[in-house]
Length: 352
Ligand code: SF4
Image (cartoon, rainbow, N blue to C red; front, top):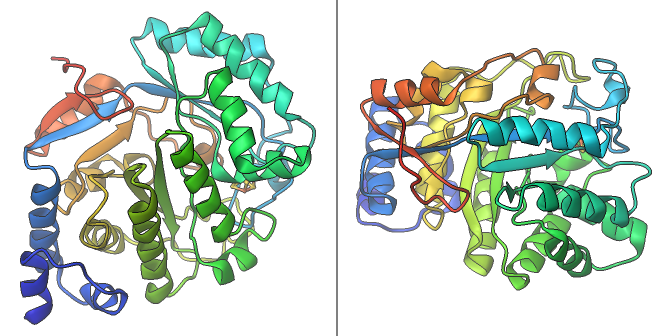
């Protein structure tokens, strides 16, 4: 098959060919995705990080259709954590040997930029060695509009206050889909502008993909190709993390959940299309640990974080929990070598 020959020869795939890849059976697709994974990251080590998400508030003006976390969805009463509560949670992570914190909320109706800067300084003063991989492009766009600032100004002020990197929470970067499911969140053009501003600030990021939002395969591939283009422009995307939409408790609960084969094919196609992103993460939190193990044979090479106390996915009815020891076992049982890593994907040594 000429398409497979071209991929094995290292050629970049077009959007049309990427859609055709979904027609392959899992064995063929997995083999070529694993080949591309070995070209990008040649050894059999699989990274993971001990981190904690701190969901500091669920008050959000975006009210996305696919989200069960924001207060208006009715699953979690409105709340705002105090700085003291946030520091206490991070202290628990530090005691457990964790190295990274993800401060995550929504598009808060009231917090000015100074609130975020005070929070960053407070965390860095208490825990200077914790890596703050926090907020999101949508939050930065929201704060920039509230303050009448450029994205670069907001990012520069946050970096000075202690922000180390920004997760690239991307949902699906197709504007027709975004108008349908998250019309008050940033456009994909604004998402790209934040990535360019992060590059200019010498900061790294990542990209994600939430699929199963009733999109077509062409739209899913459009997202992948857009991420590839932004990575060509910036080179700051350390990882790509695809996960399926969890419809329970959302306004889109009538949408059928995507299946396991669809997930594995999506991971494999992501690895093949994203020839410029080294690390593809297996989504144990949304897909379950067993499917995540299989993803490690389909192009993924990283398990992401143990993510203590994540609330966004819990709000959609998913309660999977893993410790660092569980993570090491999972990776080993998949025939791979666990590698506890830092936020820059460098080895910290593994337990065990
Ligand atoms: S996905 Fe994020 S931006 Fe959208 S409603 Fe939920 S918290 Fe708000």
